[in-house]
Image (cartoon, rainbow, N blue to C red; front, side):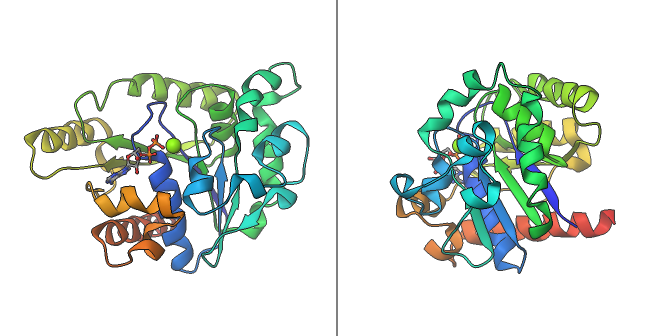
Length: 257
Ligand code: ADP
Ligand code: MG
């Protein structure tokens, strides 16, 4: 059984990319076969896992727009079991170029169907918008993980996101589910963080992951070394919590079966 999960929130800087890279790396370290799909034109997942964009022959843009087979755009990472379809700045044009194409919302779904059987998990790192790239991601996915930063205004914009999820459920992907809500960048020294946790739990209830990601400087350093947290600093708090999250994701899937 393969599961495709979009990591999404139209707000930037909430931990989507950090979660994609590190959850992907941790799932792979637990023996799962994982494909990361970078669908953000900024390509932070791509560089964050150590792929030099200048060396990329085919990126997700070619898969979406030029009908390149996803296998031909997939590259291995330095973690066993973890592959990636990278993104380069070329992808910035896709929002416009896809507009006149037939079934433009289904393109990622159709492509990933060709390779799904090879993976236990496909994680899609979404851009900070609700445009055609995010719609493609939601259409291609079984479920979404929504990272929420433990900051003031944390819930702002969420109704818009949930509305988009509902629209996709209605028109494009009836089986799309909310996999879980992940609280990120928690700072135990502030009351604010605790208030946000309470508020998010009131809203999403049992959908909120037990694992809460604290602020951890090692997590913010790792991408500049092109590494996930488990290779950059396996003993850090950041590595510990993302491993916990990976176990939680696996556990929920086993419970659902
Ligand atoms: P998004 O993909 O949603 O825009 P990122 O994952 O890129 O968000 O995170 C935004 C910034 O915050 C990045 O510089 C990242 O390194 C940093 N960051 C993310 N999560 C943490 C964390 N738990 N602790 C410290 N820094 C973090
Ligand atoms: Mg990002």
